[in-house]
Length: 347
Figure 1: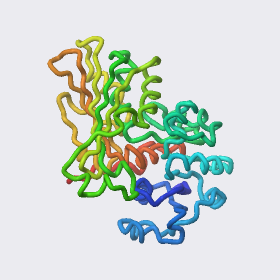
Figure 2 (figure 1 turned 30 degrees about the horizontal axis):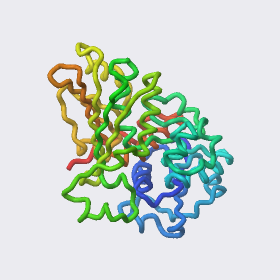
Figure 3 (figure 1 turned 30 degrees about the vertical axis):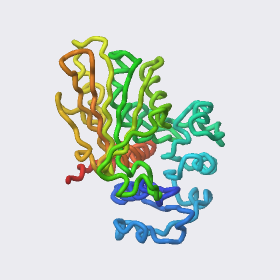
Figure 4 (figure 1 turned 90 degrees about the vertical axis):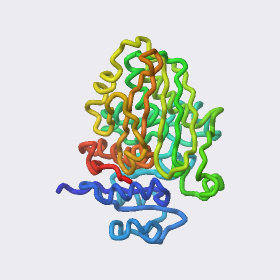
């Protein structure tokens, strides 16, 4: 085996952190060299995450950029938005390559970022230099990137459902609708009242209808795909489950006679983690749980102009940690599926 890629996780005490560790524990060409947490420094990782006992023999360390640069070739940044932009530049300046899982470098336009996140960006010089890490679109730029902005979970599911249609000019770019549901893990590991079992179970509710922070990211990617302006209505929901995103994506076909199924199959034929299902399928979130897959199904009700694309992912894998490892593989010159070819968990 070649020398293992030395990997660090900056901010490893959340759900994304433990998912990264789970995936990297069996990665054949990567070795986790450091995991940081300001609050948990000195604590064994396996004490916080017993599922990793026997797999990860490390203690959480302080998030010191010099230490991480000394130990690691690439670092996954799992700290919240607003924090990453203060910590990532210090790693980049020391020659470390970074995959950032926060939202701090996903939006290329500084004004747009600051309007949606209500804070001044601390590292605007890196906004345009960051490569947006959707491998199905940017595989080649990702290979040479120093900083990859890992996409959000909702934007991953929604963009993959719309991309073939917008790239081909097959739908009206105005009036696009994405109605999406996410499991509670998408809100992170912090204790929050609305995520308590008695609050979230046996119920489903919409939120962020007037404007969710993932909307500008979705519009940015879809505008690039359409090579022109798009109009998207995005409605997220909290669903009573732990993992998963189910996005129903609606658009109007320019030509109802178009072979949309063939369009999707051709577009994603070389994408190892996008499964275009047979016509008429209804993918369920449970069929992608624990995997890096996005399953898509195309429906054309009554054979008319209305098109419905169903998109399901595991928000912690293809929507976060798995996609981050896919990006790391590309940056390291490895096959992008390395360490990620595992079947979903069922039940």
